Length: 429
View (tube, rainbow, N blue to C red):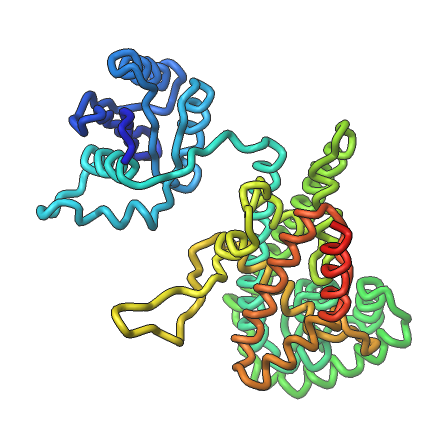
């Protein structure tokens, strides 16, 4: 049990409530910390220093991770020389029934956070590397925008289905540059049928960057489909307006996603100019693994941060949140346990897509990763496909751990080759 003075902070948007507990677990002081100026935050630092003087020990500060709201206070307190513990909301939620009475207030929550830190061992957090922190914010925003882009593409499809259902018979990808240009200028079958033939062919050829012959064939098919669907089309003002709105949103999001990618590349270029380009070197190692591209590698690096904190691959697997949950009581032991999913959802997302890439074949029939593909196929004999895919995700995390531990690019080896290398290394040692 921790015997130091502890400050629990319940973080809010504009202000936070702080409670300082003595080593005897008595309330030493309370304070409301406003975040709008350094002078107000400095008063809290002064109170903490007074507690340090009174108890002859520097207080440990505990606060809950609350989106971005805790970041300003965390940085100020850390720079003030205090150790700060950032607690996962899942952990703080476990103490909501600490008392019998149903009481919910900032002061009570701050005290509960301090008590939790008193009896539970937590690792103190340090100010993250600025470049890594920037990379983390950019990668998270990238995936949020990608998800929003998917939403607006689906909305566009739902409206186009009403206006011209068979449009996808001509252009399968409704969000392609050519399809968007056509829908923007000629949103209804009537608009298409009344338009000048040469204008439409020119528009198709210019946006698709293909020949006039190909564009003419597409035009003829498009006119045929427009005539067929014209009597069924719901071409009211609302649907026409929604087509334009969704197209505008798709373009804005695509441009924003491109800006994020460019900013990530700028961060990497700036890092390469440093004496020791740690960011660039780590990304290069991660990109050597099949199925991991630049954005995926950047996400893994940003979310995991300091890889040296993970002594074993199982710990990294748990951080990804793909370790199996445990369900055991007495003589009962559950055998249908699902993934714990207690780690970063962004890490699970990228490791899932990377696992899918490793078990597929390229267009030329070549395997992306012959070893993992064979492992997956063997697993599928006795396990459901999603369980087998989970095993691939485990393998990939262990590969990531090994690559970053050894600081060597990935090499595809079958189990026999790997065993021989390990044997040779043990003999040499």
